Amino acid sequence: MKYVRMPIEIESPEQMGYSTIKNNLSESSYTDTIFKDLNLNMNELVICYGDHVGHPGLRKEILKGEASNLTIEDVLVTAGAAPALFMVSTSLLEAGDELVVAKPNYATNIETPKAIGASIKYLPMTFENKYQVDIEALKKLITPKTKLVSLTCPHNPTGTMISETDLKEIIKIVEASNANLLFDETYRDMSFKFKLPIAASLSERVISVSSLSKTYGLPGIRIGWLITQNKKLQELFLAAKEQIFICGSVVDEEIAYRYLVNRNDYFPAIKKDMLEKFEIVKSWMGTQKYFDWIEPSGGVVCFPRIKPELKVDTAKFYEKLLAEYKTYVGPGHWFEESDRSFRLGFGWPSQQELKDGLKGLEAALKDSLL
Image (tube, rainbow, N blue to C red; front, side):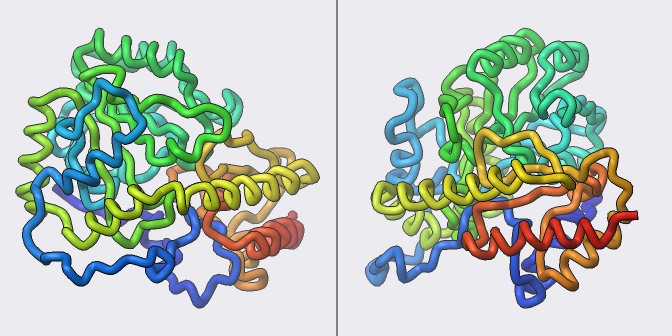
């Protein structure tokens, strides 16, 4: 495989240095958790090889309150969602195989299949169709060569969602084609209006992927998972995991387990703060003469654009935004889109940093008009 570094990683704030940014509106996760706030004593933890499938208690907690047809045997713990996505792509795709992927999308969902040499067909999600999945267009893209369909919901970077009715229709289409559906549902717990069932509970042809990084503010412990009812696929993914890293970190998995056991002590405050930040962005967008958006339905990101009628030096806009206003967003090229659009993350910054960053966006755009 020929690996190529992705712009979203090369230009990530952790690579640039957080000290250069005051108002970080580029992150796709909620505010990072401070370890002492978890109040964990792990002195008796044995630092051994862990269960290759993942901490049994953690797998049980992942499914707590979810579909009764899923069991812990359907859950494979991974070192974050990114390795889960990597394992699915490298297990199910070979050079020349067809992948249908919604676009824009998180870069890993596209770059790993590219490195494999898969033939990628893009399902466009556009501002004009409110960043929704066009089911009729999807039907036309799928052929007998299609091995995998890749969707994300709530969507990254736009925050839009698929209805349960549409999800079930998409699953029927995938089942009829003998393909599999990779459904990245990392922001599922951050849905604003309705929460979809775990997609893998609806069909053996669906592979759900999620993590604790985005919604719970725990990216540093590298805990994600994939869920599938298909026993043959689960065995295949376990083989991939064992060959890549044998098992997960017992430290990370124990932290994740204890966190989820006590999630009701943490998550209500996270969701309250996230919704308050969303209202800040929504109110700001309601006053805008420079930017417009498709209002998100979940997650902690949105994908505003510079209004089409405005003539703007976009390079100058991003330069001024960071250099003069110390504000950072994810430019469109992170997602192979025009830099007139950008990912705005409203979950990670404090409410004051978010307000200051929004002011910076407006000021930098005004400075960059032609």
